[in-house]
Image (cartoon, rainbow, N blue to C red; front, side, top):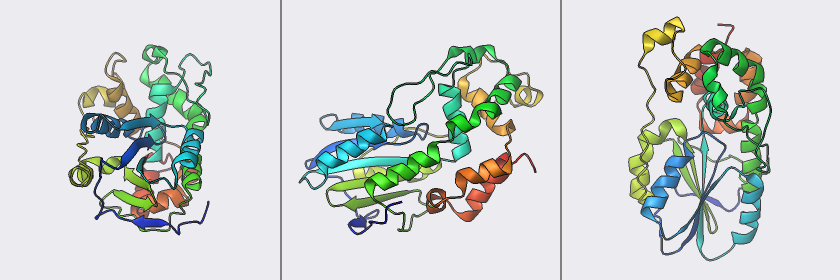
Length: 270
């Protein structure tokens, strides 16, 4: 990872968005980290300013090469999430449940196309398929490593893990880093600093509990309900779990206890 932090300044509690000097607001995150809530909030508040939302790191690199050092401000948003929850959510949406691998040509790793054949599988079969195919979706750590290499930030600052977000400036580029699980906690502060009203309430789905516990939940229920059941049920080998979180990325954004809890929650050996 690049070690060039020389021009970064932490301005989390001092930042104020100036829409008169803002050229573009770019949301570039890995998939399934709640990035759409930023998109809709910005679209609603600043409809006259260019807005981009993508997961393409090559596009980010090209964009930075053009705008770095310009007079106008550019804002780039990056989000991170519990990796197991993120991967499972990604599979729910993008896995090809027919068994065929079809990808979008999105220039980094590709994403599987959503297939409504998911709805023809029972929950036990879905969990088996997920465990078999999980490593196809485990590129999210590499994606984040590449992101920070591209922006040349070495994660040497202190991220407030209770507050859950950080705003850094590097010359004319402003970076907003956030944790998905903390959106509800920091959205008032973000409103004060940027004017953005992040609208999503990230609540766990906890109805139909008895049907989940007996495995009788019907597939025609909402995808979030299926995801909640799978998240509460599925387990993995501890070595695989460690391979996801034992790195500088997650240690920067999460406490040691939080990382330990992530592993314990999905550890099949416990």
